[in-house]
Amino acid sequence: MIEQSQGLVLRTRPLTDTSLIVHWLTPELGRIATVAKGARRTNSPFHGKLDLFYLADFSFQRSRRSDLHTLREVALRGTHNVLRENLACLQQASYCAALIEQTTETDTPLPALFELMSGLLNHLPRQSAQPLAILVFEMRLLRELGQAPDPVDTRLSEGAKKILARLIGSDWSALRPLKLSAAQFSEIKQFLHGFLIWHLGKIPPGREAALTA
Image (tube, rainbow, N blue to C red; front, side, top):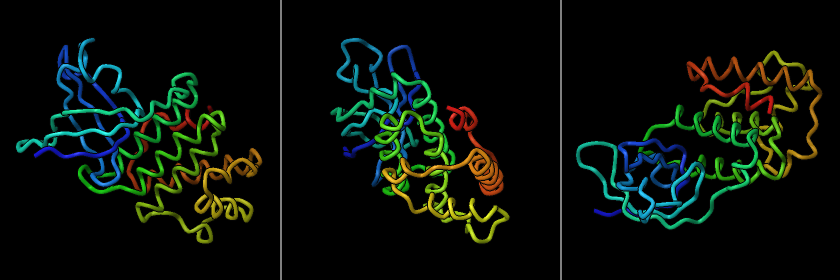
């Protein structure tokens, strides 16, 4: 049966000399992986439509034997090209994508996380790799996973507790006027590092680069 969805490309990797494996984040299907047969050929109908953080409508046929499905058609909706022109933004988006992959199961509806990742990709080019965005992403991801820390029940300073509470509830547009001292940023950064390791077991590579961008 052919299914359809809209998705963000989280990751791609070669399968053969001519084919790609494409990992998608979708709102209603969650994370799924597809094989794009022949996508590496220049005359492929997929050519130019499958790259990191591309947004597309796509159709696929489910495999009965594995969680690797067959990609049928792709209609490109957006490319987030600005990310490819700014290494710092690309590092931040890549870390967040890896964090989603680590903390979610395949074939599980993830509408809130799709919205979170989409919001980040739209926000980053406007703010030129604002490190605070990574802390906000981590807090919102933890909230959606039901594991967000209670700012009151921490050993953070009073100022850091208030900022942490704002990070949980703020939207992306609210980040611009939010100013942290170097000490507050470092305090919250280290707190979330320990909190993520405690609850997730490990953190994907790239966090330090994302936070120093």
